[in-house]
Image 1 (spheres, helix red, strand yellow):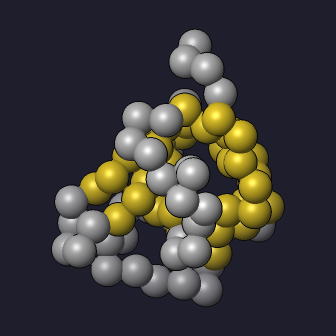
Image 2: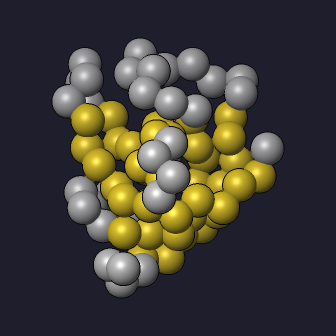
Length: 77
C-alpha cells in the first residue's frame, strides 16, 4: 500500500536497534532496511513517500514496516 507520511525520525533501542518514523498522528512505522542514510537522523522532521510492506516481519515489531521510496526534510512546525 502506497502512503505519504509526515513525522519525526527516531532511533529505537530494541535488539540491535531500529529506525522509526513517528507520524504526526502518533502512528509509528519501522523504516525498512536500505533507507537513505540522509533520512536516518534522530529528531529530523520529514515527509516520506513509501510502501507499507505487509510481507515483511521484523524483530523490533514497532509498527508497520515502511519501505522508503523518497523523502524530504521539512522545517519544524
